[in-house]
Image (tube, rainbow, N blue to C red; front, side):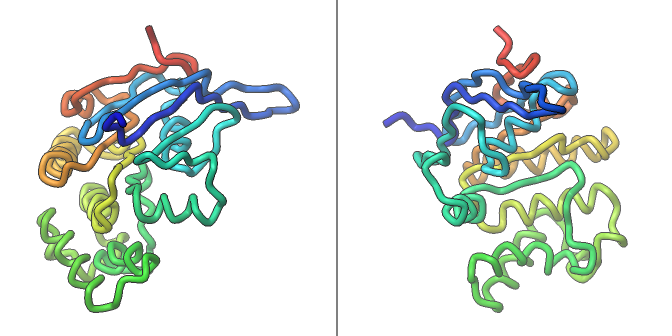
Length: 225
């Protein structure tokens, strides 16, 4: 069996707007090897975010299939799909999606709590994840008291604390300046190099693209020739 972390086969996603079909993805066939760091690039509206959402099981394709770590997502129940998202996939969102009332360490350990990890172990793992990104001073700080760059680094720590096989980052540099973007990309590169995590990021930022091993260009919901 080929050593792929992510495979899509003829994936199409169609939305209805006033009974008119709108094609966000058109027949996407893509294979990403384990340990790759891939950027999905293209103009706004090209389908980058939709593709990441479909790969991550946040959205189901209208047609076609998605396989993550040899598991076909289309054959799964909603409960089983939730387990794949929880145990196999880490997400870094453009808006960070940190929980405002929780501290940094509580945000990071939250996914471990959902996984059923005991209180002592999840606290230790959350603190270790934050330390690995140089965030010791943020343990007890809430998102409102962090800079954008700090929130993004906490979001990465949360995404990797459960040791996912695949990390998906959707426009991760959109709210960051160039220096913070560079730091963020270096953290992603560390995750890729040190942990062997497969990373797929949707971006239009040339700085982010420069850190990836391969680019996949989308135009009007299709992979460009």
